[in-house]
Image (tube, rainbow, N blue to C red; front, side, top):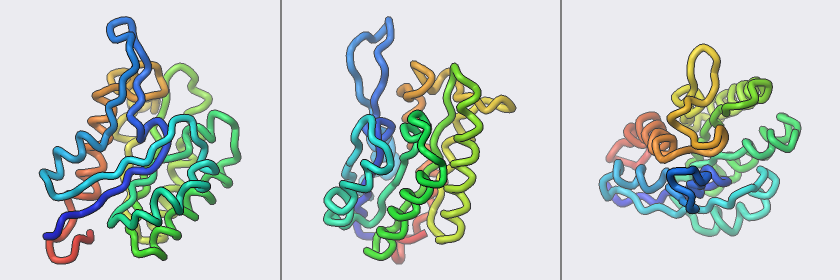
Length: 200
C-alpha cells in the first residue's frame, strides 16, 4: 500500500490547543494528528491546517489554498464549534461544511466528516451541538463519505456533557481528549482502509 497524505483542517481543535491550568500554566498544543500518526504506523504523512478561533466561513476562505492545492488523499474536516459560540445559524454551518465535502470530492479527495464535541459548564449549548452533529452525520451518509462520531465517544451519558477527563476548560480538549479524537478517527475511518486502493 502506498503512503497516504492526510490533511487535518479546522480550528483550535485541529491545532490541538489546550487551555493553561494551575498544574500546567504554559501554552500547550497537542494536535490529534500526533496520536493518529502513531496509530497509522508510518502509513501516512500528515499536513495540519488548523487556525484557532476560526468559523466555518473563515475556513472556506482558505480551503482552496490549504487543502485543494495540496491535493491530499484525505481531508479530516472538523469545524462548527466556534460558529455555535457566535450564534451562527446551524443551517449556515452545515452549508459551509457541505461545500467543503463536495469540493473535496470533486477534486478527488476523500473528506472525513467529524462531529463537534460537547462542552461543560453551560448545558443550553449542548442541544445545538446535537442538532448540528445529526445534520453532519446525515450529509456524510448522503454523500457516502466517512463519518467519525467524536461527540458520542467523548460525552457523558445521559447528560451529553463533555466528559471531564477530556477537557481542561469545558471547551477545548485535554491531552486525553485529543488522544481520544485520534482513536475515534482511526477506529471509525482509517482502520478500515483496504490495501488495494487506499479507500474504505
